Image 1: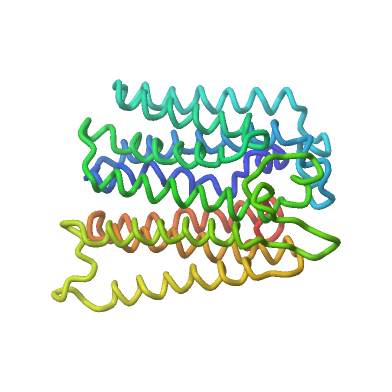
Image 2: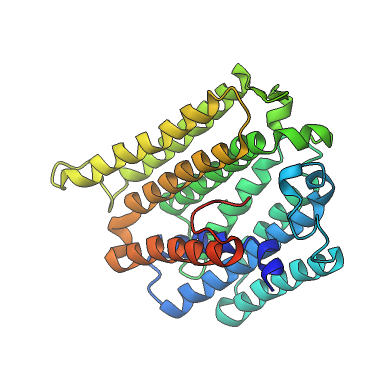
Length: 330
């Protein structure tokens, strides 16, 4: 069972499953039953996406010494079973949707999320720039969360979906591109990092100015979207009538993202474990910034749930699967 949960990247499943939940919450969804259903459908999407990704990338992963303990690489899980798990996860997610809130818009956005995510899994290492498909799948996943509330999608939910899209694009194209640059190059993969000239020579990591510019522009778009979201009616993060604490926290979380980005874009020696630690700091700060900005819309109880459930879930399952509560294994 442990190897199957590792294959599913189950330690991070709650973070993915929070995406449709956030989409519902910002639209005013207050039914705990519906929010729980959105969470379960998000779990299905997570399992489908990661298992299919592992299935498609097993040939690339075999070329990396650090990835020899992955379930498919070492043969602990047969490839046909991985494909079956991905299919069952898809059936599970659509079954949840059909049972709780079947509608055309729900079907459309969930279907688009699965198709875009699946297209990335199948072609992501073969064609440049398909990280955008993965980002768009999360955009659709957030709109799927909003769909049980209304068929009208205001600027608020479009901005939230865009934040998820850009964050996942950065996570995959920049962070993932750096983390996997060694075996991606050996396997002849076509990633943005490699196309923009990132290389490893011995233990030396060569990060080009083009790649740095791409990363900086992408993160600047993320901050712009967050700032635009923060001034929407009902949020007004910078209002003079509000406490200075939210705006101060926004600035601190900005610095908490800029610092690891500066560190990993200036590395000169390839160190996968150090990169993963820096990525974890950046990703947590990005998530907490979104929770901070939407907090006036969702209330204290939901804020605590969105912070505690993914955090406790990760600590518990990472400890069970890998023996360490914090060390990321990706």
